[in-house]
Image (cartoon, rainbow, N blue to C red; front, side):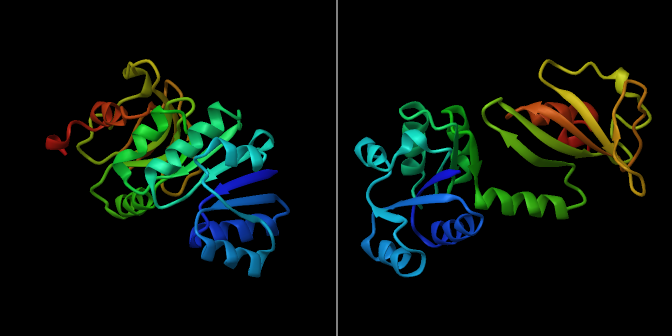
Length: 224
């Protein structure tokens, strides 16, 4: 694939090095001359000094033939603008943006960025997974379709315990997928599936509405 990366800091450098080792064609756009020189010395002429938010720069970079466009600078605004130009001006099929402030992630998704990567968000999700009292974990967000995959863990007082899937009338856009029980293989949830304490339910939910399913299966936070 032909992959354009905007941002030649440490993340961009190591990502480029990996992608090159996998046989991909990579071009890095970086404003800082020192960072560009580092690429030249270590990885060859794959880094061009320029602003990835400028249309003229992207024309020269051949953005119209790019398969993937990745913006990973330290500035959320630059990452968002670069991805929007790539997607809507050059029709790049897949755009990926680094989100430095987790509060901006929803904005990126609503404005058409296909995938977002929030380091702070990933760390927080890891913390969530290690907290037994936290019942909801975000597994994957797909911005293009406006859905996410979540995991909800039931406890003894959860509303869903001892009830079957058919007893829940899920709102439009929600769907049960799998139930995971310790010592068993994951099972596809059918209408007859009866939920038990400590079940981990994998489900689809519209982005930003995952707490509706949490409240339906477990109860609102004050009842946990």
